[in-house]
Structures are given as structure tokens and as C-alpha cells.
Image 1: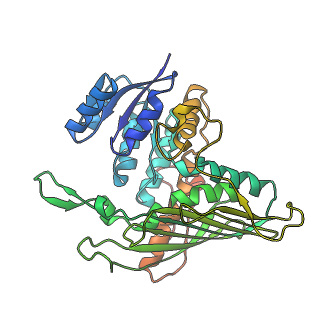
Image 2 (image 1 turned 60 degrees about the horizontal axis):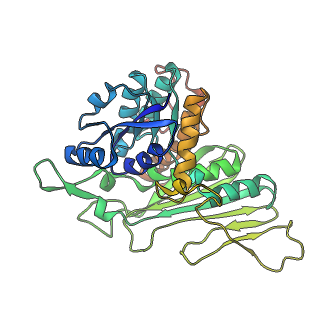
Length: 370
């Protein structure tokens, strides 16, 4: 029998709905959006049998799984409600907004018989997976220092019409940029097979768009459990086009670097390449060669096809997904702690290990439990 899936949030969620609807083992059974006309139009256009504008009503529908693609500050609340309603959850990034929410999420997932997966699509970019394989097989020796950047002007998404029709600031205007570090930390932590234990943060403040009141750019400097250094820069109010993800990885014997511009090239310096005089140019991209045509239905190359595949298989085969609650929080909590460090003038802040939390009422608090 096909997995019956509902999608909540039809801006970001529309992409994942397209991917899931093409799978023979899935049925896109319902969609939900606070904009009733958007939900109605999507259901009509794509043959979805049910649509809702109320999330509680969606949870009452006969569904097996929910895709939570609602605004970021609502991710934990929507996930907890879905798990309590007996639904499996694929949740968009970031996993949570606060450490207190992270504790609630862990407790709920542990108490549930349902599967939870974080939808971090960068972990499924073809070039990110190629980097993972090259690093793990020792092409650059031991990785010791990594940088990542996500720069994307989102100012047009920081204002929207409110219930009264007047413009108001959205959650994106209130977003500390480093909270959205999962696109970089997700693949980086997979490459390193490591987790972050300490965070230092600084930000530029609000200089570019005083009318929006948003932080322009924010940087996090992280130390891992195995003593590596990681730096991540995020900015969403910036005078730079086009948007980019960028990585550089320094190893004890070599170096990997991705391009910042569309016409750039991935480069590798490695002792495994004999008689090398310069970086080798790598023909890498976001698409997986040989993927079926429907793999591009969601956008972001073929990443979301393989991401959704892992989620669906984890449910149908009753096994933990690769990006379970702990992996998801490993790539989310450092950003929360880095922002708290920035508020304290750059003082280091320990990053909690959610595996150590024994329950919702666990005693003791970490430095960033605020």
C-alpha cells in the first residue's frame, strides 16, 4: 500500500510535494497552507484529493506522514503535533528555533514510534556527496579546517501582506542568519564524521536595510569534538548576486574547494594525483549523473529526490533515517549557540549534545539554554 503523505506549507513544501507525488510507493493525499486559495489551487492543479488551511484539520486526515515546510519558528510545534497524531515527519530546516525546543523535540521523538527526519537537501547535493567520499577515502589526508558560506539576498521575502492586507515583517527579517547554518554544517559534519562542541559568533548588525531591522551577515567559528575548526558565514541581506554556497576544506595532505560563481570550478589538490603541478579541476555539480528524469522535479538539482527517497524508505523499512533527530540537531544547535555568543560579545558558548538529554525533565542546563 502506498504511503499517504500530507504537505504543510506550499511555498517551500510545493517542491517536496512534486517529488513525492511521482513515487509509486507514495500518495500525495492532502496539502495545507494558511492561504486557503493557494492550498485549493495546488490541490486542483495537481489532483490532490484533500486540501486544508487549518493544520489541525490536516493532522486529522487519514495520513501516514507529514512534510513540515511551514515557517521556521513553527517547525517544532508542527512536528510535535504530527508525532502526537501518529504521523511520521519530514521537517524542513532548521530543526528548531531554541534549545528549549530542541529538548522538546528529542523527548517527543524518543517517546514516539514514528520516524523523524530533517530535510537538509545540501547533504544530498551530488558534489557534497563527492566531497564526502573523497575526504573519507583520504584524498586530502586528515581534514583539519573547513569553511562554508551561504549568501542569499532574501530581502523580498522579509516583508509580506498581513491579515489586514498591510505589509509586515516576516520571520525571515527576525532570523539570526547563523541560525540557518544547516546548509553548510550538514554536509561538513558528514565529511568530518564529527560534531560541534563549542561556538563563537559575531555579526555585522543591521546596516544595509534599517527599514527591515534584520542582521545583515553573521559568522560562527566552531570547534569539533575531534579538534577540527569550522567557520560558517550566513547572510540574507546582502548586495551580492547570484546566491551561492561555498566550501573550502584543508587537509593534512591536500585541499578541496568549491566555486563561488556559476562559471567557477571545483578544485582538488591531492597526493593521490601523481605529478600534480596545480589543483585538478573537477567536473562536479548538484545533479547526480544517471538519475532518472523525475529526479529533478523538486528543484535543487537531484538532491530532493534522493532526500525524499531516504525518508520514504526509512518509514517503509522501519529503520532510522540518515538525518535523524540527533543529526538534525547537530547541524542546528551550533547556530543557536553562535548567535548567543554574538550577543555576549563573542564569548565561547558550549554546544550541548542532545544524545545526553535523558528526557523532557532532564536536570542541568547548558550555557546556551535560553
